[in-house]
Image: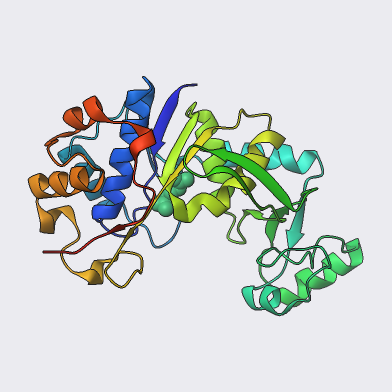
Length: 291
Ligand code: GLU
């Protein structure tokens, strides 16, 4: 064990907020003498190898270093299939024929929290399954048969956090591993015990920790760091102006990140590492104003 990581999805160039999260993940790992690994999360159709290559180049340019070559999720299909087969053999998976619309319109079970899968396909008979398969005419997704509605994780910034665990998808209808499964399986395979990422993913962590426990993996330590917002309080995006490294420049980007963390005089990552103190991290989102 003992590694931290950064796991970008190559659907767009990294913006200053993503770079800041990567710097924080690196600082958390290096300040605790962990290895730091890089993982390209390219399972989605919207991702591209060109963007991934630019992301890795940008990370290297600001001084983020990682141990070993970057791993690519698109090369891990066998790893995911093996875990899915093991869950299947334990009777923990079921086919789901629901479209997004079916889920939105389905009545919710009395105990199911808002935002949870309503359980429509959980207890179908074999005959009902055959019928649903024939009706929908598309390959089903696979969902995990969970035995709880919530799970609690420990987060270095948020403390004890309890969130929804529903029967989430582990394999999409197109046969590709779902995000929540791939993250958990890869974190274990890469021996990651410290997960630092944007706090938009805090709500996913109970599902992931629950699955990790089910698979007998140790649960990682989490630190969900505040996102970067634009002046309107919305998540920073490309349309907000000059937000990528190509637009900002390495030196200025480093200055902005160091300033946002409260160490305006640090000019590179080693200098930041020398002063880094997780207890002093700003807990509020960073409002970014492109020059
Ligand atoms: N690939 C995800 C993203 O870029 C991050 C996943 C994770 O850190 O667990 O939003």
